[in-house]
Length: 578
Image (tube, rainbow, N blue to C red; front, side):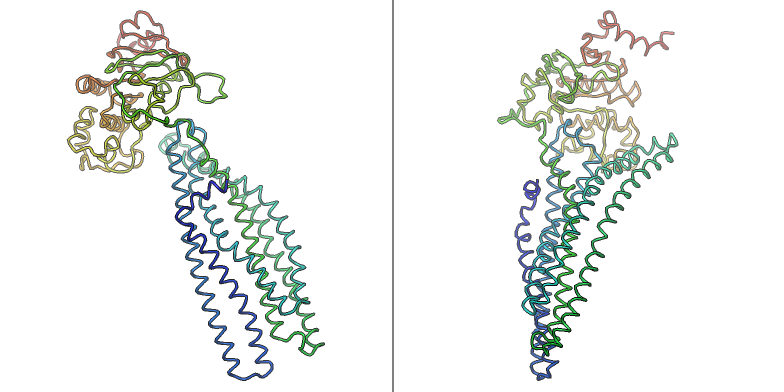
């Protein structure tokens, strides 16, 4: 796990190595300073000459500046390394998610992926920053402070050695109890983020059903759950400081008592006032070092759960991958389903699609009708390899879709999904998702085909009109027509409309289909619809029922031979017949 995550350090290796080196020099200099202070105090206490006092003073000033310089350089290197590492880690996570198939994305919830890209990466960044700086500084300071303390007075320094095991046991016990709480809290973060995401995304539904109070209670519960776990963990971690300070102040009292007796009994020959003063300083350095070690353990404990969650995403292998020697060109819009079966999970008992045999000629218009849950959308998602067939074979242009380069295949199979998404930016910017190099004339042409040109020109800014996030400032029908225009801009060999005219009126729907027939006759068109009027002029209509093909034929053939189709047609046209 650590090896995988550390691959994101990359160009920041130099800064990551430089930081602990600079910190080490800073620590050595800091540990020399109390030694020199002891010399200075002894000089003053013994009535030494002013020149000697001045010399020690200048040495102390020089050491302070050296410590400051190396400390500042270490801080700058640490900041550069940790920030760069976090940037690369977010980059790697985001790019990994971009390569995921739908089945990979189904495995992780959207809110969980957002938490991993933000909160978890931030925790890892904090831990990395502490590891390359504080985790070097604290042990070095502890070791050098003990060495210098022993160099001054071995007898009294044994007091500091005696307290280290006690503090280590206390620290281990606290961390051991706090760790499970930190592990559980991040799963609750996912739940909290999911509540926020659902509420913001579905704000119109929430308000229309007057469910604000319910959503507030749901968010409050999730928020309190997170707060309670953090409170319990922080209460445990907060014990570190008082336990350490109590222990160290007891050590100081013991050093003061035995040190005073030693100075008095030996007349200052074994140890003088300067050495005793420096021992206090070294004691405080040892205390600070141990407190830093405890903070490192806490941060690593928190980040360990975050690292595991980030590692889960980084190690996830996309279920849909490019073949070793991919085909880069799709010959035409032929589509063949040869005994295709599909289920969303390997362990799922029921197949979403079963034994699909369907052969579509290039340029043909195919309608797909079926009830809710009949797997209409699942069927067309196999064509562009958003999922791979569990059994059987799906072919486009006479070749198995698994033989194609994914980019080449999806460039020729344009899908307007059931859930239409527009992105923040102008109408032009949204349309150019289909072709980044498209000129204004191309944009107008496809918008006319999608019956979108008229309402776009009605906006004050026309094609430069800004679209809010998710297309919130356009109607459902306008959003659908913009998405159809965007798909047409790809000039695909296969165009799939997944119930993407459900929000437009029947007249506009008919005009869109007429434009398709006249302007893109060589493009294979697959239209999934709930309204029979949207597909009745198709060359053939496929009736799906519970993931199986019930019948295939023209409108008149299905009316005469298929009960499901006839029932749907009758129910939709009952009012007209009466």
